[in-house]
Length: 197
Image (cartoon, rainbow, N blue to C red; front, side, top):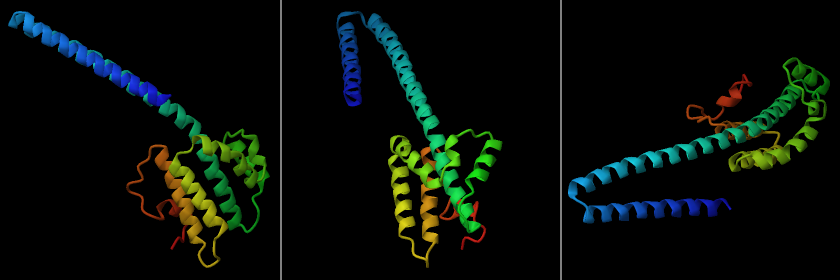
């Protein structure tokens, strides 16, 4: 449907330009050169103004849609990261996450999500459909890779899981508009891991 609209808009624009070009051609042939020059100049000015207005309107519309999508994605991504950190911090304490304490901490921070009292695995299962709907290809691919690496981790190389998680965080950041140009492998992990290497 979107493709049909795009083709229709493009062909309408092309047809409009063709009509304007033919009109200018006819005007220059049948009218005095001074009059024809004035008509062409005025027509070009009007055309540029109309084209600029249409272009700006489409750009604003696209930007508004992207902002609405970003507003849907951000809480989903934040929750994925929060769950991962809950599991990470619980692992550092060598115990399962204390979901009651986690929920209390989040409520102090202003969060009112009822899902936070549940098990992290349950929370991830409930978020997965939202990730499928709102996540970009890169985010979904990095999440799948993280899950695969996590399931097949060797005891000799737990850092492979952490680097896969970093790829996931990087894909999320990129989807939300960050460039990540100055970040090297391990930089996002160093934010919360002191002895990375």
